[in-house]
Amino acid sequence: MSQQSLLADRGFYLGPLFRRAADRHGAVFVTLDRPLDVDPARGVDLSYAVLADVVEELSARLWEAGVRPSEQVAVHKSDNVDIVLLTCAISRIGAVPALLSPGLSGPVVGQLLARLRRPWLITDRAKLAGPLADVDVPSLVRRTLTVDDMPTAGEPDRSGAPSERPAALSAPYAEPLGNHAGAEPPPPVRLHPREPALITHSSGTTGIPKLAVHCANTMWNRLVPQQAMGWPTRGETAALHMSFVHSRFYHLLGVLLRFGSPLVLITDPEPTSVGPLLSRHRPGIVETHPNTFVLWEELADAPGAPLSRVRSYGSTFDAIHPRTVRRLLGASKRRAPWLIQLYGQSETGPVAFQWFTRRSAARADGRRVGSGIPGFTRVRVTDDHGRPIAPGVAGRIEARTRGRILTYLGARETYERQLDGEWWQMGDMGYRSRFGVLHLIDREVDRIDSVHSNLEVEDVLMSRLEELREVVIVPGVDREPVPVVCVRGERPLDAERWREATADLPAMAEPRQWRFEELPMTATWKVKRVEITRMLAEGARA
Image (cartoon, rainbow, N blue to C red; front, side):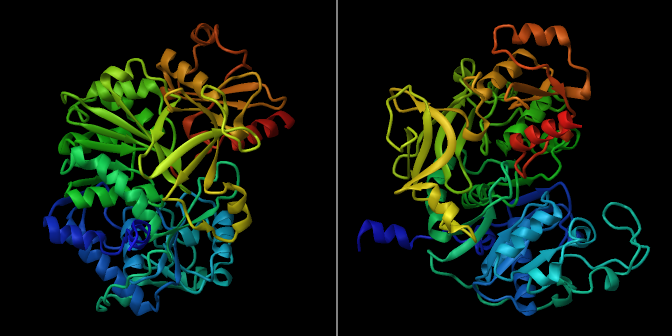
């Protein structure tokens, strides 16, 4: 059999993840910051073995409810770790989890459900009574299962407000998954490695998210290089605050479970909550979104030194500010900590990587996102006609990878338009150095003629103004660069410091100060720049 055939037969399956880890490593601890919605009585101090049991119990309930192999099961519920367990349980019986972010609005969820093939829906009463209240859910799904019982009239919901209507009136079509408690787990089902195995969605920074279809084989091709990167920190306690509906979380989980790492899984990123938790567990691995790392700069000198034992930070989903890298690495007391940054998309997985150490972070270029992954990915930069261009010349970034998704569900033509043969158009502008290192400039849709790189200017401002929590430069009504800034503690921006910091930068409009919570965000805390431009335009018209 050829090497290509062998690679095509390999697969990364989510269903057996926890059981295999429990069999291999025993009762390694898993700590949560919030009890599971599917089984709150278990508390927050769990283990590999406990979570393996929960996955099997959930798969038994789903099978008893009627879910069968290859059927699509949408998961859209309040944010919590049980999203992960439900995903594994669905996969264990051969069905296809379709993960919809808890942060999506009801109308967007309705549109995504319509693209699926009459899926099952797993949700909770907070979603049914809130964002989905005005969505005709029964017409879009096969059946609706809730992870909690529906409230009776007058009983408080998750927000603390009393329910005005009995569940029978508010969502008569919904059935609690607990009705099938006690069912026997069926034998695991293993789909062919090239069949659809997982559906996630794109970030939606420029509009309605696209549904990305993964198979076990492409997921395996993403997993293997990440396992190699994780080898130096095998067995270290890992603290993770990541989107539970993003494919990156499941690959990282596969790496950590294989190596027997204790886990601290975090849903609330506020430093006042995270600090004591990390101080107690002293993780050697910390991974979260770049914008969360900016927030966690406050932990660098927090009481209890919560980051003092970190050996490896992981950052993906977006480029990270050099200021943040320096603060994080400076907070660790380990001899030689590092931060690894992965550049990629939901559609491709990581296609380039970059390491930062204390020494390299001191002179870090935030736009340098690294090199392709040998044997798995290649990166090139092309002109408008798809022709490779010389080093140092800006153009469109394209990637070739074995980890690319199968298609966009319900949008095959959109998928095909992003392909040039085997090369995938990333939608970013950048250039390669003469040594082949990739440098990111901006998203194509975010380019402003008078600014070489919005992202580079943002890095400079974040380094010069330590009080900034975020700065985003977007095109205004007349395509002029408009800086939108968020200041720590919501203090007013110091106008004189701003003038000094921007004196040698491209001319920009006066800064607009927003609260951080006002920035439109994706599930991975990416700022929706196009949405900010729209909001600014609407404000100007008003």
